Length: 219
Ligand code: CA
Image (cartoon, rainbow, N blue to C red):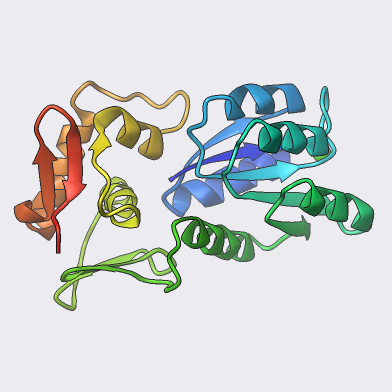
């Protein structure tokens, strides 16, 4: 999962970036409204965390432009306690949820999980596919009831696949899901992760679609 944080306060940004990375998300940081618009133009984000009081361009304007241009990723607004009208304007402009600063990082993570589920039409908090289950909250994968020890990138890779179990992912699409800006991605990085994931969950679980990419096996 690839997230975008739009926030001009360094301290808040560092805290949120750290927490989201520990939760296994790739996350990029835009420090002002204009940088946010440029980033959103890439169309690679699964979810956006949006501060409203921003230099260069107001958060509400960023959101309006994003929605008008067809941007569909869920957006969580991060606002001050006394800014009720701002929150209402944000929700009316197409935000999906909001959090009041200072917020609890565990609550932020839970709201992110909830919106990511809703986005893929997933009602249950735990994904299931054949013998596999993936629990984003507990960061746990099981096969036939047995817990498998996945490292964060393997977990993120399986999460991407299991959220859209019929989609064939190109390597580029998986790189976008697993890595943020400035992270070194070697030409065979995704193959390496697929290889190590297969070793843990069973080679047959991840199917290679020749010349295209990867998908989960049908079940
Ligand atoms: Ca701000």
